[in-house]
Image (cartoon, rainbow, N blue to C red; front, side):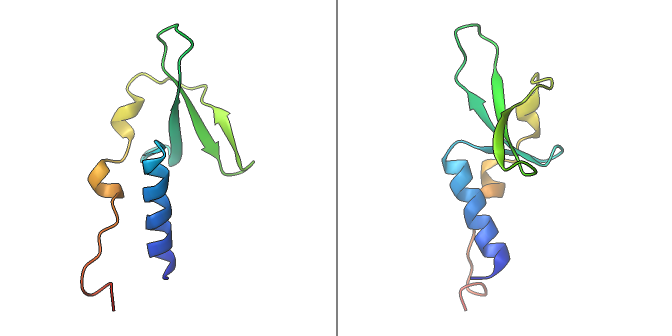
Length: 82
């Protein structure tokens, strides 16, 4: 399996598991269940330490930077299946 296809499949699986890729920050985010305070919290995957961390930045409007559903889906055509 070519590397780019494997990466696309991995991205699709992360998306199924409710992780979202932020295009500008180039990070994977997942919404944390809030503790009843109504404030949205996100965790992100830190590739340097290879662990999940609580995002301490401004989360207002963060969802606007997430890659869309159609951009994540793996699309195959006849040329790729050869």
